[in-house]
Length: 155
Ligand code: CUA
Image 1 (cartoon, protein in one colour):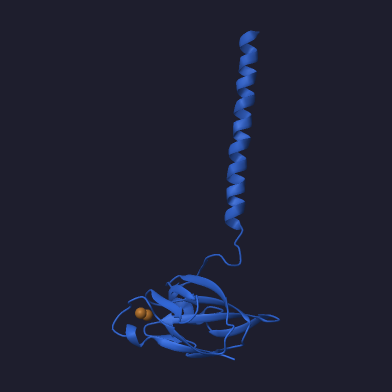
Image 2 (cartoon, helix red, strand yellow):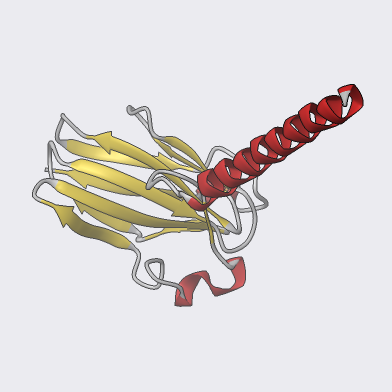
């Protein structure tokens, strides 16, 4: 009788542990399935120019004073070559590369992303001063590295 009770207790503990493990796995799977809007996205680097939204790089209005800026850093330049951004608007930069790792740095701002083939990196910035902003590649990427530049015009 005594042993039987102990067995029951151990069985109860076993079942409880099983539920704990299932719970952990369930929560883990749920967390992985939830992609926050600022999270990592993947893209086929061979198909960047055919894949939305990078098939049409540039500014897209997504809110009253809010934009997505889709940028491609490639050897050796940036697409779009020139972009106009409204002053004071919230701009979500999304950057990728079809070839090798590049940098995406907007001088005079805190925007400093890596353009990685297969990934889309994000950063949100609001320009509060009008003017021309120089965009540079700050990752050595080959013979044309120094010539990788473009301009963002804020007005
Ligand atoms: Cu691209 Cu350096």
